[in-house]
Length: 215
Image 1 (cartoon, rainbow, N blue to C red):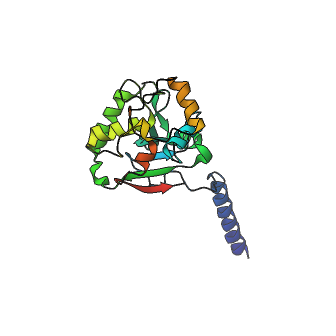
Image 2: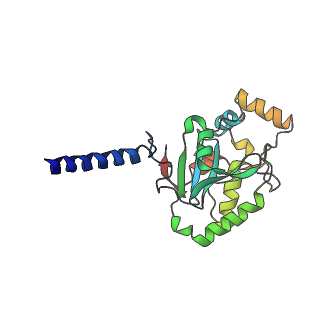
Image 3: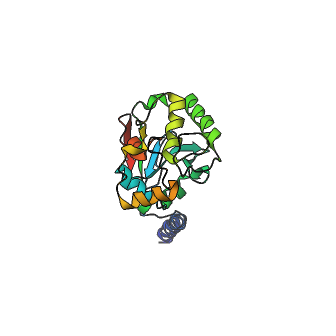
């Protein structure tokens, strides 16, 4: 009888120990953000909540108005992006900033091209732009940067790959009143209709990319 009681006490103590350990395990109704699905060099898209996002969506016909490049640094994921200024943002913070925390991640179809050496080169190129002001005028220069321009230039300089084709401003739909108002605010009556631009929409639909994650 005493032996049986001892066994029961040991089992009860073990269960209490397991329960105590489980109490310290974080519980979430969502899967981990990263879960091994993301890689350095992936391109992430979201719908920005910025003041110009709606105009960009209407002009380009795009759901997505902001983007950046994912990099892993010391086991943590970040997004290199052109905001004010160009910076490296923790992925979690970046996602939370977008509309409904929704995002899409794309990757080069020929992902084998993103070797350690190529990623190192991409980061070095990006460092030239780090700290630069955001380009409200969407000029094709390296003095200031907007989001899709930053990603396009890093990839093109590091790999020679053009993710999406460059366009001119007058190729977009500039007829909507929201778009007209934003252009008026930025340029007055001197809209640079022949300025080279690259849009998030054009890059999102590029044939050289494949979707790897959407949440």
